[in-house]
Length: 377
Length: 253
Image 1 (cartoon, rainbow over the protein chains, first blue to last red):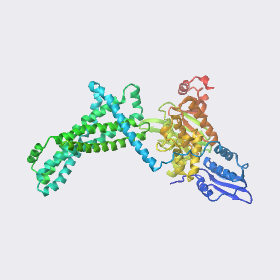
Image 2: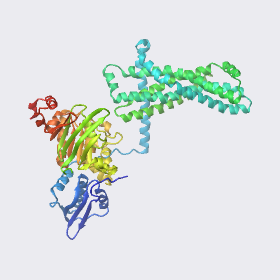
Image 3: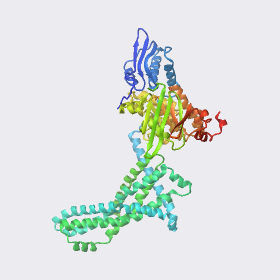
Image 4: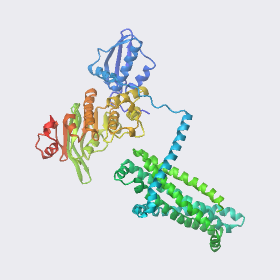
C-alpha cells in the first residue's frame, strides 16, 4: 500500500559491517522513508556481537524513525554481549539517539485481546438484551412524561406536533400514494393471471381489496415512513445531542422527552393512519385499474363486491397503523437520544433506526395476523 | 531565490472571495527554526492564510515558497512530497474517529513509508510520548479523550513523519490555563529537540507573550507587523494598541 513520496534523497538507509576493522558504517537516509528496507534486512542478516565502532558520517538525513532503528541495532548488539562505541557520532545524531532513548514505554500497551467465539456470542447476546432493556426503559420514560399530558392535553407542544405531521405526513403523500398504487397493480397482475385460468375474474375485486386493506397498504406505508421519518428522527435528535442542544434543553428545565420525543410520536400516530387510508385508496385504484383493463373486470361489479366485503378488513388494517407509528417513532427517537459524542454515531443511529423499525413492523405485522386469525376477524 | 534559512516566504498574497478581499499584498517571512504566532481579530483571514500555506486552497494571487519551493510550480506528486514535510494540527484536532490514537498517529507512516509494523508502532508511541500523552491513551478512540488529550493526540499525528514545519491552528484554545502553558512549553521543547519551525494561529495572550519568538499581526489585509510581543505592544498603530491594551503591561515581564 505504500507510496514513497520522499522527494529528497532517493537513497535508502544502509548499514555495513567489516569484522576485521570493527567498524559499523551507516549511510544513506535514516528517516521514515528510507529506514524500512534496512529494518527488514536486519531481521535476516545482523552483525555479530563484538566491540564495534559506529560511523554515521555517511548518513544524509536522520529523523526519529531512523534514530529508533539505530537504537535497536545498538541495543541488540549490547544485549548479545557486544559493545558499540558512539563517540564518533556527530552531535545531532547523538541528540536524536538520546531523544528516542528517553525512558518511557515504546511498545504499545497490549490491546484488548480478541474474544473467543463463545465469549463473542455471549457479548452479542448481552448487547441485544441490554438494547431491549434500554428500549423498554426509554418507552417507560416516555410513558411517564406522556401520562400527565393525557390529563392536560393543552400542555402538549401542539406547534411541534403540527410541524412534524407536515414533515412526516403531508410531504410523504406523493411517495406513499405512488408506491401503494404500484403494489395494487402488482397484486392484481399476479392474482389476475391465476384467477383468469379458472374464470374467476370476479374475485379479483375481493383479492385486491383484502390484500391491500389488510396487509399491503399498512405495511408499505409503515416501511416507507420507517425509512423516511424514523431515520430523520434519529438523525435530528442525534445531531442535537452532538451539538449539546439536548443538554441545553435539560439545563433549561425543558425535558427533552417532552420537547422532542412526545411531539414526534404523537405526530406519527396521527399521520400514519391517515397515510394508510391514502395508501388504501391508491392501492385499490391501481388494483382495480389493472383488473378492469387487463382482465376485463366490470367496475360496477367490482364496487358491488367491495361493498359486500366485511368492514373488518379495513379496520384490521387501520388498527395496525398507530401501533406501527408508535414503534417507528420510539425507535427513531431512542436511537437519536442514544448518540453520545461523535458525528459518526449519528450515521450509525440513523441506519440502526431504519433496520430496527422495519424489523419490528414486520414482526408486529406477523403477530397481528396470528391474533386476528385467533379472533376470527 | 529564497535564502535557505527561510521556512516560509510569502510575497504579494491576495485572497478574494467574491467581492470580499481578505488579504491584499500580504508579505511574510518565517525563518527556519523560529516559533511564530499569527494573531489578528476575527475575520482577518488567519485560517485562510494557513490553508494557503498548507496547500489546501490556492490564493487569488501571490507567491508562496515553502522550504524554498515555489508551491505554484509543483506538480501533484511534488506537492504531496512537500506536504509530507509539513505537519498540521487542526483546530478541532481532526482525529479520525474510527481509528484509535495510535492508529491515527501511525496512519501517515502506514501510507507513506515502508517501515515494518513493529518499528512503525514504536515511532507512533514515541510521538505519543513526545506529545505528552500517557501510553495507555494509545488504544483509546478520540471520543474517549478529553479536550486537552485530543489536542495532544492531534499534535502527535502532526509529528508522525518528523515534519520540518509544524502548523498549529489555535493549539491552546479550549485548554485550561495550566494545560495551555504546558502545551506552549511542549511546543518550544519540541522545536529544540526536532529542529522544528512552528507557525501557529493563536488567540491566547499568554502564548503570544511567552510561547512564541515572534508575533505576526494580521490587520489591514496584510501582516501589519512582525516582531516579539513586547515590541509590538510599544508600537503606535491603533490596531496594535487596541489589541495589546487588553492585557495589563506589567504582567508581560
